[in-house]
Image (cartoon, rainbow over all chains, first blue to last red; front, side):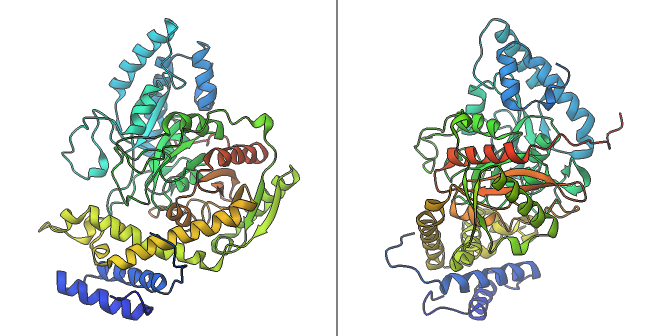
Length: 56
Length: 451
């Protein structure tokens, strides 16, 4: 999944669901809820604007 | 001395030093209160009564001979069931056959070195099972998150201090819900060696106690470098003496965005009322607005906790009998899908926001003020919200909770103070000053225990 250009929540969720199905087969309701929460977080992180010199 | 359980840790320590209280009496009293109240509260997951009494006898003999091991000589303490305690199983391993641990966690070893008696392990909710601990102020209500047993044990005056841990909100939330003080120090201030992880870069060893002097005393004994935890700060431990005689009232930024909008009316009123009292007592209090990108804290934290939790539990995820139900959210499989670039970007966000706040809020103010929780402890089975605590756990900045009265339902409320990185001692001083203005809560009545 790309970090830039920024992703939308829907793009992140589609990607996560595809990865989850490929790895584990059917996605349970609980896993689906967790993936939706992650997709929201990924979209926010992807859209963040940071100075170049900030290191992890 | 009739009711030593009403004394703070520092008062008990002074009494032991003066020979006015004996370790065996202290342990007997603690065990008596546990026997009376814990069937209703369920703060303790493992109790080593025989071991504690044996140790207390030895420490009493040493006291009589004029030998004290340290400031915590003979004082019984609880430890969250996430930490290794030699000879006791660790409940967080989530195994019915969990063996006794062969050694103490560093924080436990340092408490013992100071003379403390480890009475047992305090409950934490495991996986998806409902947390068993009830609030000593009203047993129909929760005692909070994963350090709920520690919060309840101190709130019910079974022990004067307990060790907890916070990854999102689980040390300060139980402290606030149970009407006592708590600190989540700067990340790394207390070694995590021997503490089972939720998320390595988010886990903070915390303390729950009856007063800020108590928290300062214990922090002075357990903080400091540890070769076995490379993330432990090499700074010397902060001093125990808060030197309040020389303290000037703090400069405080009352956070007006992100936090107060989320809270119940009684919590909002308590914050506003407390701020007025603090201002009347001499604190300089300004309204403060956090930067807009502070909203990233909650989302970046999600990325880190999911990734790190999934890494730690990776072996369990491969088991044929694995189900999502077996683990709490941050330990589920979903975190294994987070791309590396997102994990690293979340860490960059952390450092960027920390840098920004150090240059703005924490250069202008001794502490930022906001509620600890969105309201008083809710009814079980929920454990309440960590929403107001997550950002400071994510950023690794020190935070404390100061009891600030009761809700209309008679449940405790807490003020959260946050300071700049490594400003733990200064934050404890600010907390102690606020405590002196708003006062401490008394012990709960606990009339549910009729005998």
